[in-house]
Amino acid sequence: MTTPTLADVQHDTFTVTLDVAAPPERLYEGFADPAVRHRWFWLPGGEATYEHDFRVGGGESARSTFRALDGTSERLAYDSRFIDLVPAQRIVLTYETHVNDVLRWTSLVTVVLDPTDDGTRLRWTEQVTFVTPTGSGEQDLPHVHGGARLQLNGLPGALGL
Image (cartoon, rainbow, N blue to C red):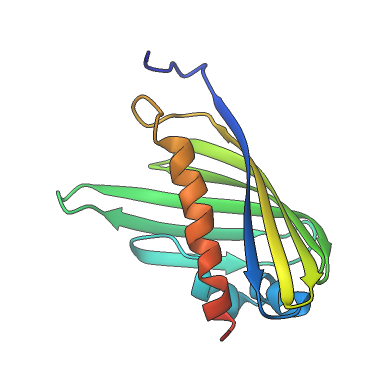
């Protein structure tokens, strides 16, 4: 495999599905309520700051400093913008992630909340574009996939379910 150049980008679309024994309104609350959102959405590291403005045109901002065991550190930044909000049904947002002030990836995310007999099926569909790879870039897309799943797994607990 060749090392990507800065002109190379990786694209992917993936969906994470989560079945939760709660109505769609409760899951929507997990995105809308800043206190609940902060319990399941966070950046690794210390010195974290969060801002949350849940309205069309609003967004989230998160910053932290991640310190590795070898003593190195990375400044992490997440910024999103809410494009479409339909209470208890749908959330559409864009976000970008920076590491040490370098744009690493940007995504378009659609969250659909479908009522089921047992609660809600949440579908998180993400269209991601990696603009600055880590090394060969082989682990970048698995990192984003795993991160989405890991965060969503925390949503039911943050809601007390």
